[in-house]
Length: 337
Ligand code: PEP
Ligand code: MN
Image 1 (cartoon, rainbow, N blue to C red):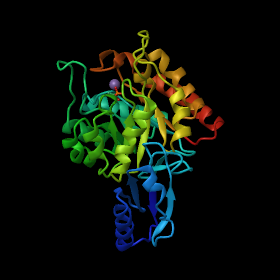
Image 2 (image 1 turned 90 degrees about the vertical axis):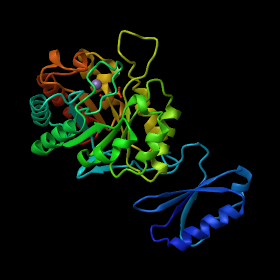
Image 3 (image 1 turned 135 degrees about the vertical axis):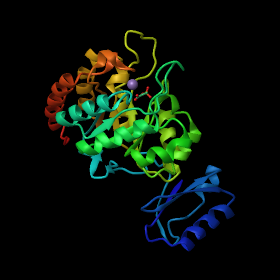
């Protein structure tokens, strides 16, 4: 069960609720959000069923949620969550496009990419400054220098920044430069990182793990939300299957499933989802049709010399063409881009 406290509930109201639960031999988990406090009740279901919390002062509502994940559940909140990133919204009717290179490589590369994605109509500049590479000998990113380049280029073009956090020790630093903190597929199961992001001050985009089930993914989001950070965006980026023609198998059914099970927004990454430039446009369009709240697409001014993921990066020209098609499609499905 979760108990949603009224936004006007006092500290004494909250303490009384917690005391009552603990007296019944149950444990509590408090999440203190900006709007209100939520008290999770953990323990024996029979004891929980005996609790009558609705009548207590300061309690707004109580919800019996049988899934392990609660705060992310549609049963907990029926209406779509809309995340406001400094005026740019994601979720509900709002469609967001995040685009840019896989990795920040140089000032010239990033500025060129930022100019191109802005011109085509993206709202976010993506780019990794801390790169989780398969080989330790591959380019690992420019770290803080890369973050500065991202911020500068984005500010110049009027874009927001989304970039990956690979280590909880870097959260504070990355928060200074980024608008959305990305959890990469390899870190979806890194529960210490997720817990730390529960206390972060910026929205988190949580990519699906390489072979994560939907339930594991929802629980990963619950780790972040239960720490008090309610601004979580899912990102479907393909999962590993027996198919090797594509880099991953993009699971577009995940979009519809997440929409059923959760109120949080979901964006799709057709670049990592397929690994092939030619497949990015058709899968982007399919993602819009499936009900996605946005796309994150790799765009490089010169994909043939990219330090990472050149094969799946669109040229600025290809991206512009795709954006034209996406704009028409979003209108058709009732979203605003
Ligand atoms: C990325 O977005 O550059 C990235 C590394 O993605 P993923 O974690 O999905 O592999
Ligand atoms: Mn990449």
